[in-house]
Image (cartoon, rainbow, N blue to C red):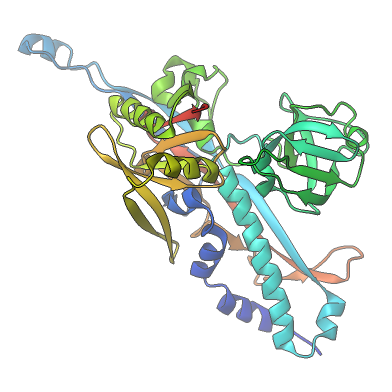
Length: 413
C-alpha cells in the first residue's frame, strides 16, 4: 500500500486538526493556560512591555504649585521579553504503515500519535505558565539505588515512564555517567494519606549523577533555563534580587515591578485569600481570579462547607469553547472566583488580574504543527525507518501590572 504524505496526509491532517481542536486537546485540562489572554503574531526579536509604576505628579490643592510641578512625569520600566521554544516530536514506523490494511488505518494510527503528543506539549506549556523559567518540575526528597522519592508526592503528575530526566543544583546541571536517566516506572503517592511518590530509573541515581542528593531539582532533559517565564517569575515580591529580569532591575521598586508575595500564612485558606485580595486592592488591583492546586482547592471546599457559591467560567481558546467550575468569594470591594489548577505549585494561592497578563506567541495560534515546507511529516534522518512530524510553540508570558497580582504560601491550618 502506498500513501503520499506530501498530498494525502497533509490534506487529511488539516481536516483532522483544525485550530479549535488543537487548542481543545492541548488546553482543556489546564486552567490558567486556557484562561490567560493571548497576544498573537508576535514579531521582532523581543517584545517591549512597559510597566508603569508612578503617575505624573503635577497635582496640588494650590494651583501655582500644581503648575510648577507639571513637568514631573510618571515613571515606568520597559521589559524586553524574549521568546522561548518548545517542541514535541511524534513519529510512525514505516513497517506499521506498510502493514496497515488501508489509508484509513494509517491515519488512525497517526492521529493517535498526534493526539498523545499534543497533550504532552500542552502539559509542558500548562506547567511552564506557572513556573519561573528554570525548567524545574519537582524536588528530590530522598534517593535509594535507582529510585527517587519526590519531596512533594503531588508532583508525580509531571512524570511518565520513558521520560528522560536531568538533575540540577543552584542553577547548574549535575554531572555523572551519563548525566541523565530515563524513568522505568512511576509509583504515585498521595499528600492526603501521606504516602510517597517514587520514580524508578534505568540507572542508579548516584551513577547517573555523581553528587545527587536530597534537595536537587528535577527537570526534563534539555529544559534547564529554557522554559517560559511564568507567573512565579513575574511575581517575586520584596525578596526579588537585583538580577536583571528581561533587562530590568526589579529590586528598585519590588511591589510594583515584581508583584506581591505574602510569606507563609497560618490558618484557613479562605482567610489567606482575603489577605491576598486586600494587598492587591491596596495597590490598585482587582484580581478576579484565584488559583489553587487541586489538593488545596479540596481543602478550601471542606472549609467552606455548605457556604459555597458555585460558578462556571467559559473561555474561547483559539476557537475552542472550554469551561471551568469554581466558587465565588467576596473581596474588599469586588467579587473573585476561585479555581483549581493542578499545574500551580501545591501550597500556593495566587490572585491574578487576568487582563494584565498575556501569553504571547509567534504566529496566529499558540501550538501548531510544523508544515512550513508544505509537509506535515518528513522522513527521519539517519538510520530510522520512520516518518515524523512535530508540534511546537514559540512564545512567553508577560505582565503589564505585576503589582496588581499577589501570591501567598499556605501554611498549616
